[in-house]
Length: 360
Image 1 (spheres, helix red, strand yellow):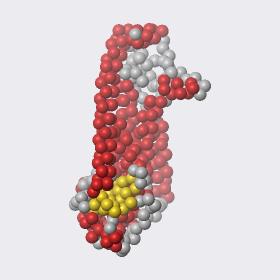
Image 2 (cartoon, rainbow, N blue to C red):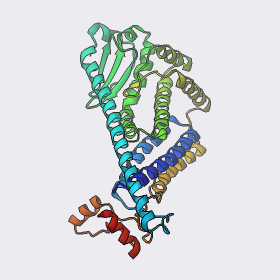
Image 3 (tube, one colour):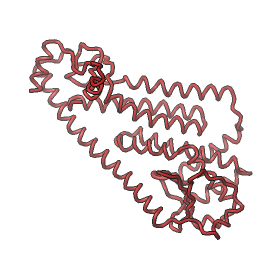
Image 4 (tube, rainbow, N blue to C red):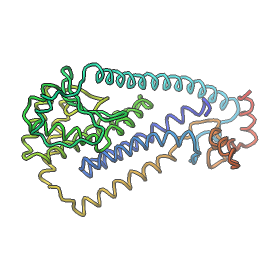
């Protein structure tokens, strides 16, 4: 990809992300089902990474452009300025991605340092406090406790962990039941993997408000789903809400872990969601099944449609070819397998002359 094409690539990708995020957000609100909303947001983050790869590795259709009558010195000047803008945007984007990715990596390293230094296995006395709690760990899950963490959380890298504050072990067995069921549901439904894709998107597209908005909605959907599962195992929704509000006063973990209660603002949303689900009941109606199927089809269709939505901003792009050339990397790899792909622009004579002059 040339520097003159980079501004168009970034602008097109930003537009695709806005469209995709708006559609998924509306679909998640429309189905009003946290479990499937989590899946939709996972599809969103994977789709965002896929859109970036499509832009780098595959050609795209061209819908025409405003540069057909721009030739001569004017085209040369525009191309020069596009190249300069591309250099600035590329360096800014690259530095921002490195800093944001480094920030996430640093937080992860600090978190594992916390696990090694300040977290420990439960003593026999502390394990005896869990005798009245009905919970089931998956194989390999480690239950730790700590005197310094303000609230319970879970995470998974090579193996899953659940960390409880030591003060929580003295709480009522029902509260422990709620917390463990909530955290284990995070692990059972692979929420740490979704969080990984989310942070990868936030690192690559740190500049895009839609990505950060999607991250907030995805986090709320994850918590609502685990709330629903944990509250379903409780005898009373009021008891679960009481546990949630009590822990929310102390828990402040966010971003790099999956914690039980944080952010005071979404607590009201989580409470309203639980009340709605209790009123609706657990039965799946034909209407809800139709909405779920429609939501998944619409999300996939949006990905496919967005992948071909590219703004014609490159003044050096051919105005006669219906498709962009194959990227050099893809063409080179396919050539090794005996497949020849067009990785060059098809120009008319006059524009080819200016292209050659600028390349020299």
